[in-house]
Image 1 (cartoon, protein in one colour):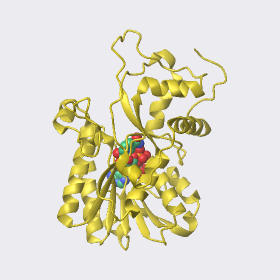
Image 2 (cartoon, helix red, strand yellow):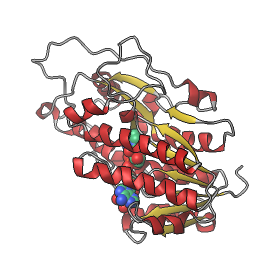
Image 3 (cartoon, helix red, strand yellow):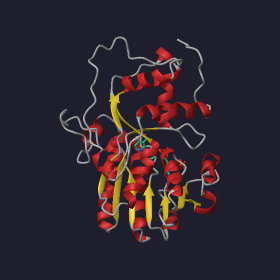
Amino acid sequence: MASGKLICVTGAGGFIASWLVKHLLQEGYVVRGTLRDPENPKNAHLKELEGAKERLALYKADLMNYDSLCNAFKGCDGVFHVASPLPNELKLVPVAIEGTKNVVNAAADMNVRRIVFTSSYGAVHMDPNRSPDKVLDETCWSDTEFCLKTKNWYCYGKTLAEKSAMAEAKRRGVQLLVVAPPFTLGPTLSQGLHSTGKHLTKYMTVGTKRTVPNAVVGYVDVRDVAQAHELVYKSPKASGRYLCIGYVMNRLELIDLVKERFPHYPFSKRDEHDDTPIVKPYKFSNQRIKDLGLLFTPIKETLSDTVISLQEKGHLPIYTFSKL
Ligand SMILES: NC(=O)c1ccc[n+]([C@@H]2O[C@H](COP(=O)([O-])OP(=O)(O)OC[C@H]3O[C@@H](n4cnc5c(N)ncnc54)[C@H](OP(=O)(O)O)[C@@H]3O)[C@@H](O)[C@H]2O)c1
């Protein structure tokens, strides 16, 4: 138990942050969650979490407003910086970087002891020069020149945001730990449809109108990501980056696993004209986070819980017969 330590989670209403808030409350922390709009009904689920009435306070804050961050961080032992605009447009990249610097500076000025920053494997794996034999681990960085050239703004933005968080934390003398999850799946706590849920539903609802790419992706369960954040925060010896990847597999294989459990959906398929060899998963290491005690949820369980959650929240129709 966390003996009532006061911590703050930025962007508390988001997909990952909501699970983190839930986990922290369960572990006995006193939690402040920042939101851009605390009154927005999309954040109502936070007030229903177990322990929220006694130990969760919601603060209005924007990453681009330093004073609002100081107000939320004052008196906190730690800050979990999860909020980020999804920098999938070039114009959002500076917001991701400046917002992160504001968080680090506000935390340092408020004497916060530790910051845990949610990066992404987008900051880790996008490097065309990585040898196929190289194990993807915490030493890997995405190649920003390549991301620029290919207009991969998400990987570009997350890489620069993580690097500037590290530089700023070093300059300010505050401890910064990084959790880098890949494509995050799992049930949602809010009513809304999150970006990764949207991604899965598009392969389950339009049949052959869409094709599944022959591409390899890393996956993890959102509940594991939440736990990883708290593990690095509370482990005195934790330092640096932690890859939080449960599985790496071809998207075709992932869709096959969903199909096995939910066979009646009109699944998309691989492009029938694509005769390129199946892309094989690369090797990766999640040993650092496992060494802190994380046990990854089996992928079949994650996929099943994701689909059931999408059905329960009305984002995915419940098919009882094949539409193909
Ligand atoms: N989901 C994934 O597969 C995945 C994988 C790897 C890494 N990540 C990282 O994990 C973090 C959370 O992702 P998520 O999927 O949970 O995203 P999400 O549900 O979209 O949550 C993002 C949160 O950031 C907040 N936000 C955006 N711009 C802000 C600003 N200027 N000021 C304050 N808050 C702002 C949003 O608040 P509003 O509600 O006010 O818009 C939202 O609550 C991000 O850093 C993301 O890059 C996600």
